[in-house]
Image (tube, rainbow, N blue to C red; front, top):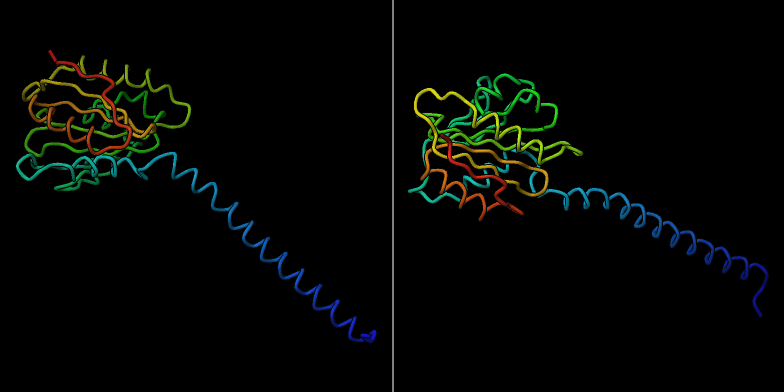
Length: 202
């Protein structure tokens, strides 16, 4: 028969094991709950920034399809790649990319990809829309703004608007053949990409 002292030691060990098991359970439980929001955010969009969207499209180009590209806004210009566009520059968003100043409040990020020789040959932009933005109204306003422009240095042939990965809207205008290649590469490379509007510019 075990003595009182031996029984006390066994009880202490059992209590220690119980506490250890509870701590392990809590640590793993907390870790899991902290990871869940990040995982759901990851499921929300495949692209961290608008510039990632345009880079994904550019990487889909073959060597013979590529043209001289510049990106970003005037102060943050990037050569040979798309670049981030400062969304506080509402006037430049309009004059360069065709985004009406009134829509700047609906976006949280932007990037551009422009033909270095002539912006009317190709200008593309990607916008991450804020939660709750009416994407149909956004698209209609951009389309109307671009189609009503007075063009200098040659008129583009086609306007294209693509939705990608739920959060992003891509707008592009330019020469017909370049626009065709851009559309094919965007639709093949981007998650959930679909054409929302495609119109001739007259």
